Length: 91
Image 1 (spheres, rainbow, N blue to C red):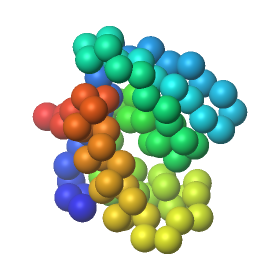
Image 2 (cartoon, rainbow, N blue to C red; image 1 turned 30 degrees about the horizontal axis):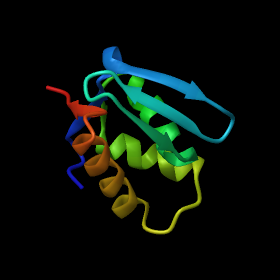
Image 3 (cartoon, rainbow, N blue to C red; image 1 turned 180 degrees about the vertical axis):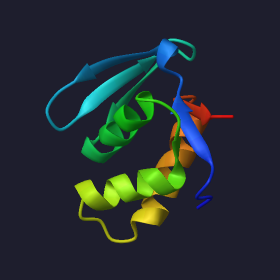
């Protein structure tokens, strides 16, 4: 994990449908729709509030969820979100 790296969503291209513990998100750039479990939904919602560091996202997960090896899981989520075009590095 790169604690100082900051991420943000490509929110101008994302359309959400949210339920209490899951969501689907449509990326208008790719034309793809993605299912989000509760944790993925919460992470993307947090990144929609503005650029946020990996360290702050890890702290957010630790306060909100009980997860083994949250740093590894966060890294996996960020890689997937980036590959899907849902997030981008914030300068």
